[in-house]
Length: 251
Image (cartoon, rainbow, N blue to C red; front, side, top):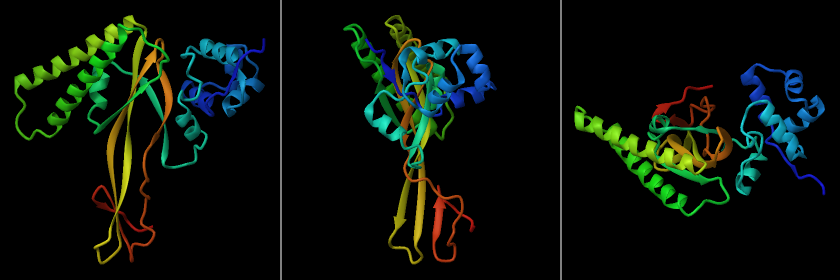
């Protein structure tokens, strides 16, 4: 029976080696996989699944680290890395404290990157969504407070965090963990009533939270980031470009 082949995520190996200050020669020595195969993996060419798993094990990363995003849509988007409206986002394992740091974002996008869950896990995941939603709402209100924050407000934050942490622990018993990351999304708006053509770029932070099977520590996914603003205004005499309310300088 032929062994299953899969297509790795292009550039994932190079990114890992840069963070570890390793060369492909050193990776080949550490993993026992020849450089020719490592080059194929980095280019995203088909390789045997057990080869990719061996590489992940030898480099001490999750077995899914070098694999492409799980859903077909993300996979198609990832195949077009030069499209500036898509962003290749790295999701990392989060705890309750880490979750609080990314929940200042405006919108939460959930992903379910497991194929099956047992009957006991479903209600836990539903409770987690509610707990995260409550924590998110609390943190959003907290960001807009202009008055002094009282002790009860600080205790409420602790209660929300403890509820989420408790659910994380329960999910871990069922072999699940949560990965997450926040990112910027840009909206390009034009003002048709302005005497001088005006384009406004406005950003907001969104967050992706993904339910994963342990021992996942990180995974890539592709997100829509809208139309990125230019760095300079190439036609400052005839148009006005603002980014979050600030006028762009001429080229």
